[in-house]
Amino acid sequence: MRLIATPTSDPPLLPVPTVTSESLPPDPRILAAQQGDRKALASLLAELLPRMRNLIRYLIRGDSDVDDIAQEALIAIVRGLPSYRAEGKLTSWADRIVARTAIGWRRKERRIKDRERESAASPLTSAAELPDEYTLRRQAVARLDHLPDEQRQALVLHHMIGLSIPEVAAHFAVSQETIRSRLRLAQGKLQDLARTQDDSAKTENKS
Amino acid sequence: MSNRSSTESLKMDQLLPPLDDRLGPAAPLSTAAQAALIEQALDRSAAIPMQRMRRGLAFGGAAAITSAIIYALFRRWLRTSSNPVSPTKKEAAAGPSPMSDTLAKTVDPGVDSHAAVDRESVSPDTSSTRSTSAKRTSLRSTQDLLRMASERRRQKRFAEALQIYLQIVQQDPSSEESYVAKVAAGGLLLEKKKQPQSALRMFRSALRLRPQGTLTEEARMGICDALALLSDRTAEAQAIREFLAHHSDSPAKGKMEARLRQVTERLAR
Image 1 (cartoon, rainbow over the protein chains, first blue to last red):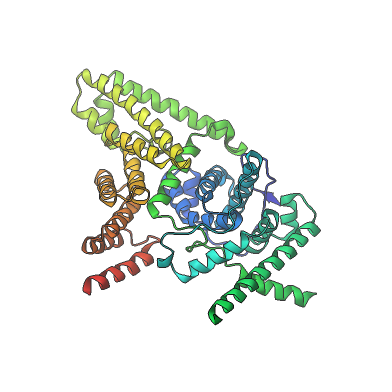
Image 2: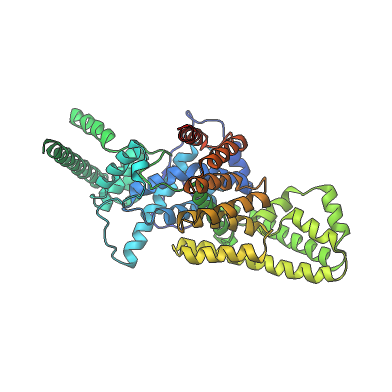
């Protein structure tokens, strides 16, 4: 198993799966970026950034830290790019770095101060002009905001990034059974929340 | 048990939207702001000491880059202190080398090779040495200012960041930092200050300064956004057409085409 080379050792490194059968021809920008071409690097990062920001938001509560974490993750990607071997998708490789940065960020934050938890996603001024899909995603992430960090992170790493249970367990340095338990609890709570939302919507419609 | 798992898995698919690069759940961020975020990250990455780089690159790469920096600085010192004209002409005739180009971008982004050629070619007298030296000091300080602005921005001290960007523009209007500062300031003026007219001036000025620059797409997108905020539909439609003409491979192409259709429909009413 190959590990991402990243500049710090805390938290533990996430494993990078080798995806040779599905590998596409390497993007020429990757090689150029590895050789120091700033324009190619900026272009790659611009392509990755929207997905990175989405993943960060799935992992953390509220919008206020998303761009700060995104910038840290961008730096980690730039630093780690020389180690990227184009064996798997660049997005999968980047996802793991982003997850590591976001989870590490929350850990740092908790060490520094007890932050007040934001119970729901921050409101948007122009939400009315945004597409339904966006609204649905915001609703989904608002449900995630109700989960404890450990359950939320396990859920996102397993269901969104596609890490296996042993990989998630290795990341958090806990047993596989603990991760299975966190996933079960998280799934149950999300289903309850979704049911409650449905029931309240039905009640509102009736009244 | 397996049935239960598959049911839960199905439900999870419904409960958790896919991870992709489409809008949501992260709050929307303008293209200009995204570009500024990336520029800041690149600047901060370049400022990281070599010993913190990955082990694989730490020895060979660091030695090569350090040698190249020393060599480039030595050549520049020779050029300005002995004969400011002929080496520049030689370089201009030979064209920029890939290494010097990379260095200009990664180590000393404040130096624009064409601007440097122009400045040094037109004033070969002894006073040019002083002015070039002063200019170099000024370029260095605009780099520092750009880092400061990025830091303020990271700390969400947007008003201070904007002031610093404007200072960079005033201090050395033709530098690479000024180009970046103009696009970044345009974004802040538009998003944080809601001053589309000032933002428009910044974006247009950046485009005039570097018509083929790395932030051209962001500047053009910023112009479209500013004109939308100004409710100048005709100009906005024209700006979107220009954007599409210049950036036909942009990831925002589909969005901009849809936006053009909307604006054109509104204009037709």
